[in-house]
Image (cartoon, rainbow, N blue to C red; front, side, top):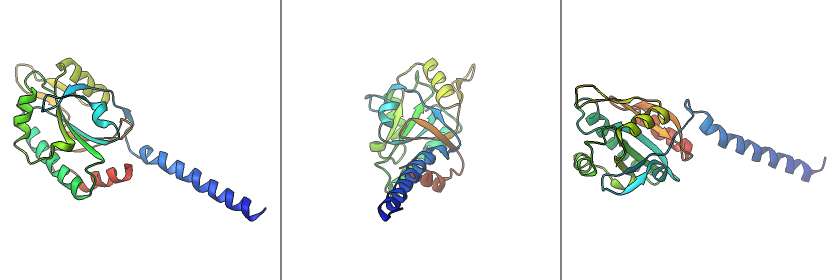
Length: 196
């Protein structure tokens, strides 16, 4: 076998190996759930959708509501910390943070704007979403994120997931992390770096 043939075979091997490695990054995550689209408006009243926010970006999402009297405040504070860590790692152009209200009837854009103003955050890559029906958000959370989103009977409180959810640029839910107490920031940053 000639040197040229040998070089071609080695080059082809690296090319194939590189292709396999590219595929295996997403494959190496524990979850692989296609995330559906969710038409919404953000805290500024601008029409958007999860697909539009996800386009070309890795998404870290959570589910909140502004009347929440337990987990949402620490989750939002933790998301603000995550945003700072993402910026420190130089990844702010790669990542879109999305907080999705499970109480769209109460959480108007104005209410979400006031709620978000309590935190030090950059609106450039963090959107708070509302503008859909309660049925739509319950179905979306159940199907796309495998998490509950339901009103507690006789109360203004909602049952919802308390995780941060990692969604690839391809719109695939890959992993969830603790969002309330001691989120694994370094693990999340590491996973984002693996995906980019």
